[in-house]
Figure 1 (cartoon, helix red, strand yellow):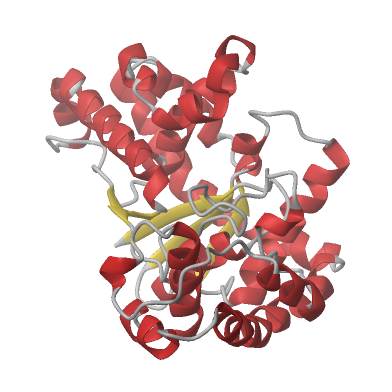
Figure 2 (cartoon, rainbow, N blue to C red; figure 1 turned 180 degrees about the vertical axis):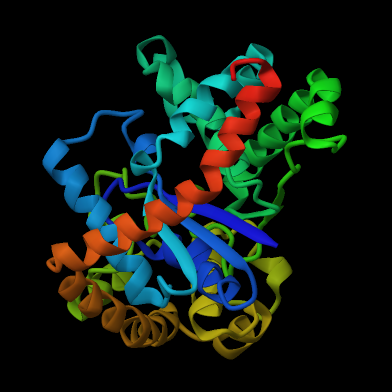
Length: 338
């Protein structure tokens, strides 16, 4: 297996990033070749403050390291340092079809009624995501549920390229297919962590209110305050999962507890059934403080070590280019550009 995935440096690395992605990244690096990217080109599809963007790139990298990613086991780099991503993205733009992009639900959700005012990059970024993956011929891509559609698009693009250039691929590579069709891996402890203020919305760094999320840099007091004020309903806590499927805020707290503790949601619910929400919240706060605060403290140390982070990203970019450059060159030969 060759694993590829990335996280945008949009600020406020949060619990959703940790449980939905990073925990899985750390586990995968022990048995596979893993390539983890700070996808900074994706982040500029909406305007970013340049100084904050630079710090956010360091923050994501520090979060990776503090959470257990080992630069000796995994390739860690920022996307804009490897030019093959952008160049391959243009080539794949000419393979992909407008109808495919029109079906992408995430653009519709983010743009809403303002799609005419959105950047072209926000519309086409799933093709850049396909280039991120296909540049390394990744076999598996750990993602959250909301990104599954984009992996399916990557597969469609890879398959169309293989069909369109079948004869050239055979002539140049002696293989019938060039690009591997990547498989999505939706296997994190919590595949989708929701907002603390709205159980129907995904936890996000773009939400204006900081009370909607647990940031990895939050202090124990901040975590306590956010969980205490997390939205709940007035009904009691039941003992069956079937009874909380539409109680979205309770389901979210139980899911987070399960992800942090490593216990099943059923067991967590059973432990707190019939009790007041304060019992669940107090216990969850204690778990989060024990797990998240040490990561946050380590992140704070690493973020300010600019030379150390820089060396990791430079080394990672060199290793990444060693894989991506030959793939890009062969792609250009197959198309007839080289």
